[in-house]
Image (cartoon, rainbow, N blue to C red; front, side, top):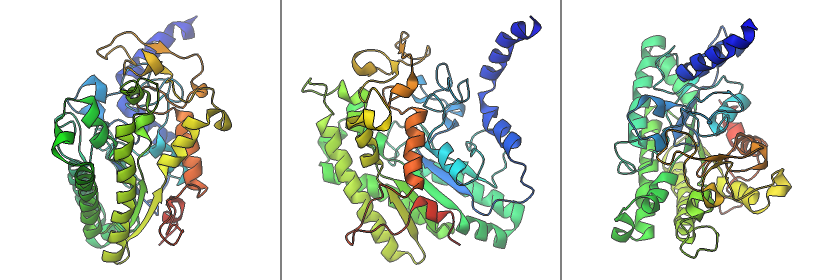
Amino acid sequence: MLLESLIPLLYVLLISFPSNINCLILSHHHHHKHHPRTSLFIFGDSILDVGNNNYINTTTLDQANFWPYGVNFFHYPTGRFSDGRVISDFIAERANLPLIQPYLQPHKRRFYYGVNFASAGGGALVETFKGSVIDLHMQLKNYKKVKRWFKNKLGEKKAKRKLQKAVYFFGIGTNDYISLFLTNSSTRFTYTKSQYVSMVISNITSVVNDIYKIGGRKFGFLNLAPVGCLPALRILNSEGDGGCHKEVTSYIRLHNEAVLQGLKELEKQLPGFKYALFDYYTSTLQRVNHPSKYGYKEGKTACCGTGKFRGVLSCGGKRPVKEYELCNNVDDHIFWDSLHYTEKANKQIVDEIWSNKNYVLDDSHHSSYTINNLFHLP
């Protein structure tokens, strides 16, 4: 009876301190006496964010620190936009690292294993959801602060070597495109698609260039998923047939072609620059189009939300739309909410990343590196 009476109290305490989860798991599972050989630095948006937006003044649309987020693995909300872990968690696990803590987490700010700078809603462009997110350029500024932390802890020579050995992992750009359709932006009428994509790409390569100048050499990238097929975009499809949003898709395809060219240019210009580009677009689209092949029953409708395809972002009581539906079995779904994937889908994607499948090939039909390789390079 005593235990049963304590359960509600324990739940309240956990909800009150979601920021501690990365520290708790790190200390429980890892008791390394030595610093890890390779650190992991993560830049991106909600597919990689592990809780940075818990600590900024933003809208509830850009936060996931309330029920039912985190319902399955953590059993309480941590700020991750999923029912459990996200891609960056599984990358760290595969690299034999603990969960990488969000940069803004105030507890135990020790960065030897790496740092997660990603912010839900963040884009490569400063203007994307400006004032509500941590854009890529601000993420770079935060990384520069971590660089100074390493210098103070290890000295200049060891810090430089540490940052050279690290892997820099990027998943960014989606919000730069969906913001054109989810807001009343006039930007898509100001620039041609090619001009706008070039702006996004140049902002990404500029940040990569800055990290290279500081010492970074090993970079892993996800290209952009078929976001036109997200439930939130399907319901905006003007054709009304429930298909993927064609105009968003055209931006995404242009971006994915351009990001490969941008990385190839950096490889030519920067001695020692190594990159791996995973084809997140193809990997995800295969699951959307053929859900049963990958162990799902549903490839269009989200587990959590309201409306057609549960495409209204209403998952959780703090959202403007208070009422929402929750599916019976989250593992039947690829999509957790109207814009994000389930833990099951995230794990499957990283399994492919680590088994060296679905990498973007260059003109000679080979991929220079895989993300798995990067962790083993000197």
